[in-house]
Image 1 (spheres, rainbow, N blue to C red):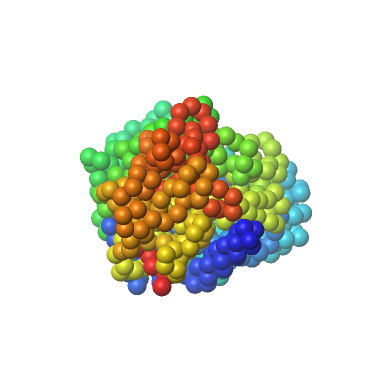
Image 2 (image 1 turned 120 degrees about the horizontal axis):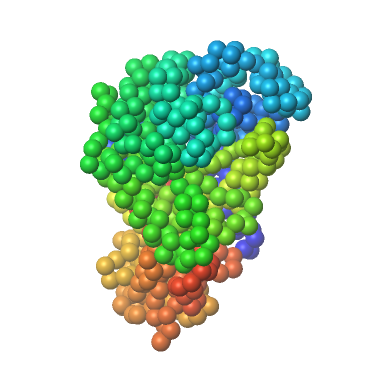
Amino acid sequence: MGKFYTLFSFLVLLIISIQKVLALPTLPLHTNSRWIMDEDEKRVKLACVNWAGHLLMVPEGLSKQPLDKISKKIASMGFNCVRLTWPIFMVTNQTLSSMTARESFLSANLVESVAGMQVNNPSLLNITVVQVFQEVVKNLGENNVMVILDNHVSKPMWCCNRYDGNGFFGDRYFNPRIWLDGLNKIATLFNGVSNVIGMSLRNELRGPRTNNTVWYNFMQKGAEVVHDANPNVLVILSGNDFDKDLGMLKNQPVNVSFKEKLVFEIHWYSFAATDGWRNGNPNNVCASQVQFLKDHAFFLLDQGYPLFMSEWGVNLRGNDVADNRFSSCAFALAAELDLDWGLWALMGSYYYRETVMAMNEYYGVLNWDWSEVRNSSFMQRLSALQSPFRGPGLSDHEQYDVIYHPFTGLCVPKSSDAPPVVPVKLGSCAQPESWTYTPEKNLQIKDAYYCLKADGEGKPVKFGTDGDCNSPTAKWERITSSKFHFSTMVGNTTLCLDLGSNNTILTNQCKCLTGSCEPATQWFHIIPSTIRYD
């Protein structure tokens, strides 16, 4: 029964993902406070995947699979958007902009990539790299996938380090005048291409030249250049220190002439605190990282700006301790704030990266030859974040709480039975039960008298009613700094919610309250939502 339930849940999620990409929203997009909206004044949640095109000026993977197959794969995985990276010199350097895809490959001695593209995308091999980008964007649009054009670097190369010459205004390859010219050219080129919904001005500003005054000067100029050339697109601004820091905006907002098009972006990976994730207590590291992000970026949501987590991701082999621990924290935060996001990455492999030919990208959702999903469990986990939990124009229902399990990406689903069916199991977040976490510390079904109650160590939780909800076993304290452990007292023993077999929710002795350890099965989070599927 458990295996059937898991398979059924995955099929439901797959159908929902496919349904989500059948049509584009009414374009162009604009902003309304912290939300990105379509022309019908409905919130559009960006669930993007990053597709690199900045290394050889040819989007990766076109030697491995036909373009249309890649686009359809993106849509079938539930992504509604691609953050497509490009280098400034591709459009400002005449030698590079006139180069064909074949010539770009041969400049790096990539004879195999030429042969692969001849098989999989022969019509793209002998057109210019700029035209290849146009064809990629066009094909994504034909498959109802939106595109954000991300200026990743100036000189085509892998990104990033502090001293690569691509980091900040005035660096060796980062002439502000040329950069502004490149933004203008790309914005103009894609003006009228409806599925291009945004332009990101620059990826991961960094390095010893970093200066807030210079940042304001040129980012404001870049924003105006893009908006003047293409007033339909969202204009996306990144922060300093590898796009981890937008803290300067607390006291000094960006000054631009246009309205309802400005978005900010942030990046978050485990390597922002690698030692902490590997050697520290995950509750404390998660709490510390979330507080840093609130101080340096997430305050923008309260100021009324959309914040796009345009890069985040993990090693999908599942063998990286830091990434594994980080991932549950990241999933929980992305769900709680209902963020727009862009996962790194689509690529199963690269043509050529950092002196390595055909390098495998273990953060990529596709496998090395781009033919299959690398990690189907991760994609199932991700699916709940691909749909909005709330936002204008989507639902007028009163807000309620969702019990969300970031390690699995599942929720406590709605039950049509009264009292609800036991044992309580996790399931799809597409139709979650409506909960409220009361001031009395009950986890109670909203507008009902049923509450979660512990029944002992190793036993499934059950539902209490009326007077049962006043008992100690129905009081759930959030006992760690992450606020993800829900504990209760059974006799003299403190027990925590935990994940049992077949996705059953039970209680066990609380684990990983201190030390370097694995708490993920006991991490549950309360997610505010207004979406109701009746």
